[in-house]
Length: 637
Image (cartoon, rainbow, N blue to C red; front, side, top):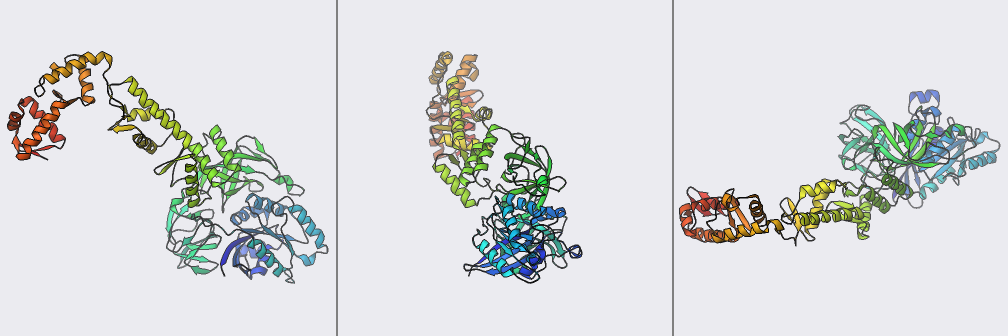
C-alpha cells in the first residue's frame, strides 16, 4: 500500500487540552521545554507522529502542537504555515474563546481548507449539544463551516478513536503535497547535538531533499551540505514534501549562520527580496470578545510584522488605493521589509501589529520582486489586479510578460508556486497563440516585441533615406534611439539584429542595412563622383595620389563614398584603386605566386605598375591574409 505524508496542526485557546490530546493520539508528549512542564502550557512548537491506515493508503501524519496563549501567537503562526488539516481544540467547559477566534482567522488567512474540531473535556460538560451548536455558529461563514465535531475525554479515553477516523477522512480528501521540484524547508527549530553538529527541523514543501545534497540557507545565501536526513526519528536517504524533516547541516552554527525563520533550499531557486507586491484581506467576522481587537483597521504606512513560513519580518505596509483596510475588505498592497525574506509568488502570509498582540490581516504574495518606485504605475496596477484575480499559470505568465516585456526562460517564475514543466507548457501555449515570441533563451510579449521591431525598421529606413551614401545604420546609434523609447536587456538587442538579418536585412560589421539597399551618391556629389571614376579608369594601376585625385571637399566626399560602397579600394592613406583594377591585380599576383615566390620588384614588373602602388598593395594583401612576407619575398598564404 502506498504511503501518504501530511501535516496536522492544533489550534485553540490556552488550557483547552491541545498537548494532552496530542499525547492521547500519538503517545508522544509534545511539550519538550522545562518551562512548559512547569507552567503546564505550550510555549513553543511541539511535534509528534501519528500513523493511520486508510482504505487507499497508509497515512504518515506529522502533528504540530502550537501555543494557545496569546503571548505566544507568533510561535503558533510559525507552526501552521504548511499544514493540510487543522485540529481545532475547544474545551467543552469553556466553549469558544478569544484565542480560538484569532487562530481561526490565522488559519483562514493561510488558505487552510480542512479542519476537524475536537471537543475536549466533554466529560465536564452537561450540555454538549449547546456547546456544539456554539462552535457550529462560530465556524459559520468560514472554510470550516462543515468540519466534524468530535467529543473527547482524555480522562476516560472516549472519542479518541472517533477523532482518528475523522482526521483520516479529512486527509483522504486532501491533496497530497505537491512536488514541483522546488524544495523549501522553513526552519522551525535549530539545535546542536554532541558529535553530530547542527540539526534543523521543519515541514518540507515543494520538493525533495536528499542526503549529500548541496543546499543554501536563505536569506543569507549561506551554502551547506546535508550530512543526513531524518523524518520522525527515522534515518532516510531522501524526504518528500509534506513530511516533518530533520537535516544535519554540520557546516553551519546554530543561531549564528542558521536560525528559526530561515529557509533551507537550493541555489537555483532565486534569492531573498525586500519588496513584495501582495493582495491583502481582512475578515469581517464578529460576535466574540476578541472581535473588537481583531477588527482594528490596517492602516496604510503602518509598521507591522509579516509572518511568512516560520519567520516574522518587520515591515511597512503600503495600501494601493486605500488609507486603511476594514473588516471584510480586500485591497492590493506592497510590503516593504526591513530585512529580506525568501518567499514565492503564491505564498500566504499573516500581518500582525508591531507589538505582536493582534492579527490584523492576511494575504497572498503576487510578486516577490516588487518595485517601490513603480508601485502605483498603471502597468503595475493592471498586473497586480490580473494575478490577484486569477492564479492560472498561463494567465500569470502572460501578465508578467505584459508588464516586464522580456524574461529569460530560466528565470521566469522561478520563485513561484508553479512547477518548471507547468511554466514551460504555459510559455509554449502562449507562443502558439501569438501572445509570446520566443527569442533563444528569452520570451517576449508579442505586442511589445512587434512595436520594438517596427521602430527599428523605421529607423533603418529613415537612415537610408537621409543618408543614401552611407553603407548602413550604425548599431550603436540604433540601440541608442531605441533605448529612448523602449526598455530591453542588452541580449534582446542582439536577438533583434539576428531577427532582422533573417528577414531582409544585412549586418555588416558595426552597421545594418536592408538587403535591397544600394548606395547612391547624393545629387550634389554626382559630378565629383563621375570625375573620380574617370580618373581611376584612365590609369588603373597608376592612379594619381589621393591629394591629386581628390583635391577638394566634394571630390573627397565622392571618393569616400566609392570606397564605402566597394567601388574603390583604399590601399593606404595615399593610394586608392578602382575595385576592378584591384581585383585584376590580386588575380595576377595569385597566379604569379602559385608558381613560385616573388620579390616586390618581380611583382611590380609582372603588373607593370610602380613601386608607389605595389608596396601598399602587397601590404594590404598581407593584412587580408592572401599573401605573407618572408624576407624580401612574398608567398601565397
